[in-house]
Image 1 (cartoon, one colour):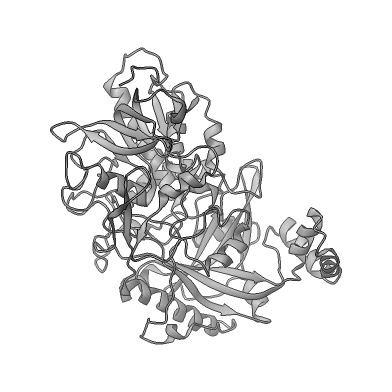
Image 2 (tube, helix red, strand yellow; image 1 turned 45 degrees about the vertical axis):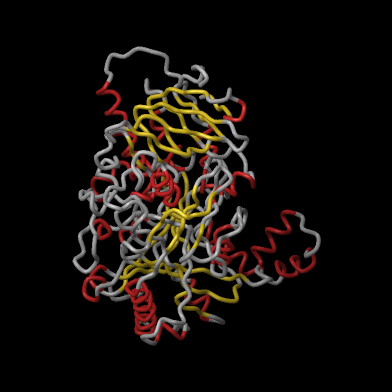
Length: 571
């Protein structure tokens, strides 16, 4: 593998390869890994470099007319699961994007789950629901994606109970109303405390046919005069260097915002942009509206935490922990015309939580030394219980907390008026900014409200403490609701059989444009309620398999160098 920097290459260089991958985030790196060691010459093009650079990150600027304000860059770094989710309750997350090798994996917390069977189905009460592929078709690549992320089995419902080291207590909740739902967390194999970072997975690629070109922002995708095939890419660096990449196949892996932006901005030949014959590119913008659903305080915290916490199982030589939450049952979604949504527990730890104190003492934090020492000394029982829970029962640690709440992530109804268009404003490379108009509909609001009401009803019925609900949850008026996005933009180049309502086909190729493929959450037909990384990686690996077949079938006997040609003439 070679890693070159456009800023150091000759001006106006032309580069040849078989497959050009635009974007060095999780989708692009997953595809490159799958193609490594083949005879296919692959070039991964990344707008940034190996590290965070404010000048490059500024290219992520947007004109935002519908979504909340943006997160500061690297906002979640080092916060861990609980700290990150607690902080995200107060600050919007739509712009949590990273222009660097590894992409969004630099700031994610590793939370993963697979989409439900229902997410792929045609649901009569949800317009444009249904995928052109089934969940069963994705199962093989879903397993490969889980392995890449160092996850346990892809089981996220009640079937998980029988696999856990010690199963949760049966609560007798009505399964026709609420279902158990679990998430697990991806970690690096050699550093258990850190989520999987795809820049490190990129460094592990040891193949002569894979090359990375950094500090190279794609400014245009070019097509032939008949608008039937892709031909090349135009690139610029922040220092003004330019280049052209000629490729038989181009894979767009820029994320839910940038994929749509680049297609729309590539309008030299087609004024509406590439793949936009039916004005679909950028439409159907979805995310995961998130809000706090309910809360518990005082002694109720421990009662609820006993049932909704982390549970472990042994798999592949290690222990994998799953977080237990609750989701709306398929039956009630169908009966009441709701979208899929699930709630997960978040504890706000007290200042004298002994586990936080132990962590600070281990690091030698001096300012709080005496307070931490006292906290640990008075919490011997909690520490002993916690060690037994973790080491023997494979369960989460007990914490001293001031609040336990359930946050919710809801599936959005696909809405053509929620969309990305091009702004009149431009970035420093002269490219139009994406203009984001993210809309949250009444159906999502109703689904979240209904989930809160049902959790409250069911908890009381089975003898659990009654949660405290926000005022708007008990009314028909949602004006007091506060939602944030989860930085999970999706569906802007959605997959489907009908070009009038989709951008790519079931193989992720842009309709009627040979050689241009798209990977990432932008191709989701519907967004589901689950975090997108596991699913987008499964689709990316599936696409990589298709690209192998496509290029092998095209040139079965071709013998040549496997390296991309970076030494062609200057223009």
